[in-house]
Image 1 (cartoon, rainbow over the protein chains, first blue to last red):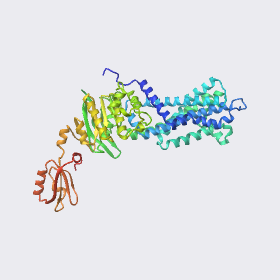
Image 2: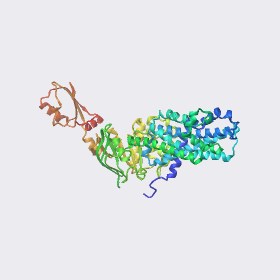
Image 3: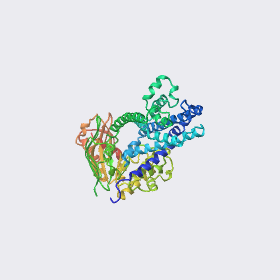
Image 4: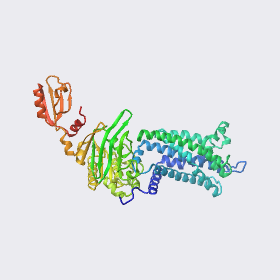
Length: 259
Length: 294
């Protein structure tokens, strides 16, 4: 053969990511939940208190915007990967992809890029809503820090999504994602600040992944409760845990379907 | 021209069931081969082994001289699988465009869609396609990379007569253009129309590997049935050229290429018959008798 033996990986990745973006955009169950739900929650929980400040001067509006930002990105990851992967397994998309020359890693990477794009859009929409409707003011550098940290720290939720997607079927995945992700977010003080929650939840929160994830955003406002290094260590540990679960379910399926 | 795909002593066991029980098969470049056999004969498993979708329990599978999972081998193959799905929310041309990106030198999108006879549906969402149209979409996905070899598992399942004819014509044209094509079917007629070579698989082994003409000559052409006066057993037929013998309570059915010789022998063995009928055998039924020999 005179021509190349395989297609260029970058071209595959771009085409795959473009398709993933289109697919996700066209399914309202994903796009509306990803982009609109955080704004709706912020309207209920954040707007009424957006003009208040804490004793230390931190804007409660900005604090809750950071909280719902953390909720929004985790939401994109857990639902996108959890329900997405479970659906694709249900429709046996994996079999056709498996026989194609597309490397599995490129397939995965395109999903991650797509989720990051949706997360970015969700954050920008949420923050813009907070600024315009809630009259919340922070410097652009603060918003940029929050966005960057939340995107970069989202790995444990990608792993959790994969674990749910490979562990459950297409019917169970949405329920399971809700049952895991909503209580975790609530108990981590993402909807209502921790000091307003019952004591046992306040004691539990420092062990939850969403708590440490939100610290990345809160500390950008000077409202963090731990050092950045501490947060990242917790998040790394949770990534390892969720990845282990995901890989175990993935391997079990590989053995059954393709061994 | 070299060997495109090869199975050597390939076996595949799923728990208690051994779906493929020692298949040796080599398919050369430019061949158009039909794997023919009844449902559950091991055709799909054989294709899965060739493509590296399953790993053989014993023996070997080679694709273009490489491990079938090698991306260089996969990049030279287009595949249409029976049990696979795809998203419903992309349009036909969007997904064909996507699959083209997986291959080094693909066909133009419109050309792939037209080879599958889907021009009128190019901008339709996949979710709105009928079963037959979906099947044609999978054909478009298999051909869009302009691969050297195509593996088509039951390509015409669920298609209406016209769509089926269109896809069969495309397969002929691709074969004439030098592509290697391996397809499975459980219709002898389809294999006969299409293939240069028919490999009959039954219960996990190759029971025949020949041209369509040779295969057909082995298939019994007449169906005989009668009522015996006194009950007879299968032993009455020992040594006679009959196939698909069924001895029910009051009726005997069988297939044969030499009905006169069989009937003469039965008369000599003292069988008294009533209601004797000798008719031309249905091709498919006759083929099944070949694979279900006792």
